Length: 148
Image (tube, rainbow, N blue to C red; front, side, top):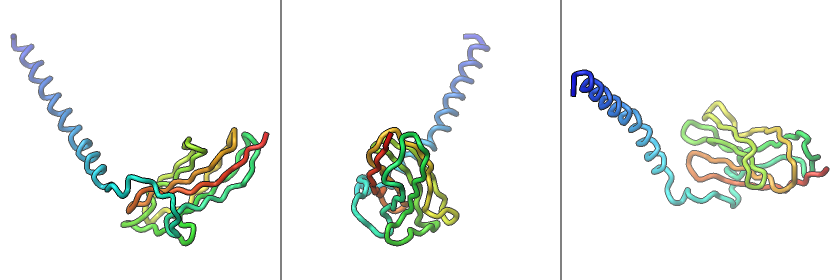
């Protein structure tokens, strides 16, 4: 092996080590995040909780392809806090099992209320999902009819 080949091999080895080192924090962060969720958080909550259950405000019937508003607030009985230590990470809207909108929220500066403007091709069930920092996601549903 001549000098040029040895230099190339050494540079390749350094690049490999640097790439592995760069990936290591991301892998550790992913593992740490997975450990945050205990088995009790594995299931989505579908029962009622005044502070966590999403409230959906949307028409019962809309015309196919026509834009309409869906407002989702977290806390069907009382407002969910937006504190640094406890807040809603995101609010998502689904039509049946298809996600059609999502908003990520910031603690302190974002109230857990969003309005999405959407259009549907067919009726079914609107599903609102929100995930607070201290538990699994909470879900609420509302039927919606789509007319021609």
